[in-house]
Length: 341
Image: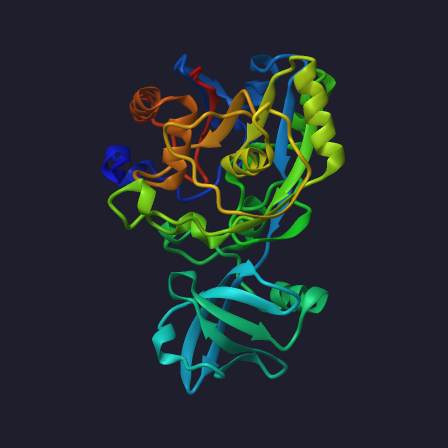
């Protein structure tokens, strides 16, 4: 399918540049009904016995600034390879040679191991595991989406993290989850809605533009995810009871679709997924998707079009613009109902 088919007009002023002061006061558009709600209204909108599946990944300070051969380099980590090795996007990487060492502090550096084309540069740190994460938290910078065109602030350090973030490893937030507060989660639980958690470490590939003309030629960056047996069993039991499954965010949905079989059952999962979902696609894992509003021609707009219908999503996005919804990571949310095939 042609990428241009997923294009739409989005003036700059619709893109949210700052977070709301109160997370669950964000708007929530019900699709396909095109009804305006707020995120805090989820308690009234969702069925009493629904199951919500969240992504508990935690964003790490993945942007580093260092020096090599008297040149400054910005190193944006995007995929963990092993204990001390990452793939990174490095500006002006053509000026780096294999074996070069980028120095961040007197006792913290990384060596260039290989160049991986569009996947970036493979680098090996002189620290690994927990020690590496400690150092990243000391000198790294929160990797805000590039469209914000600004440095991360203290406010961002809290706002660009879900309140239930637990497993360190993401370099971008699972942004649908940014709308939840402790109060809202408690109200959902008190209503009888079951809250479950998986982990998908969101990579910087989520920001990469689709550069091809046809979707079949686009290659997704792989991301690491985990669904435990306990969580898989709980989702499957809920399905057998005809309870509605709600994926909170496209990251949760992509991992669930990577782990589901033809009968709709979820299997435990631990590994990488590079699943790329475009219309037409037969979803088997969930009934609803809560997600933010995405950019034109993005893989995420392709996914929501596959989930709720292309025509329905184009109408929804026009409705959102007509009603002053805020787009992208710090923007408002939508609750999409899966379109029947």
